[in-house]
Length: 106
Image (cartoon, rainbow, N blue to C red; front, side, top):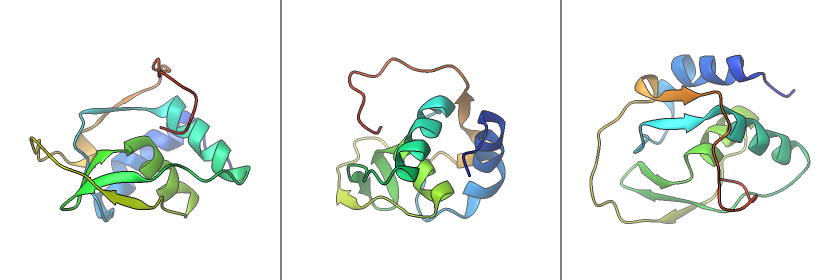
């Protein structure tokens, strides 16, 4: 099932608290998460995300999409320069599409 933007925001606010990884950015783009979920439903495999000591360095949208889809992306090690010590419930969930450099999964 493909979620609505509202369902994505509710999922982040209410169900990501128990996620195995923590965020390191202050906002996410709900339309990009939705695109990634649609791609997962089509059988596409996302690029690996980068993680350092349980904190996502790169791949927040892919991780959330994977959590909602039930299939987490693979993880590569990353380097964290600053740990913002953020929680999923405090993220700003933007319902406007962000401008990304390419159309691969983000």
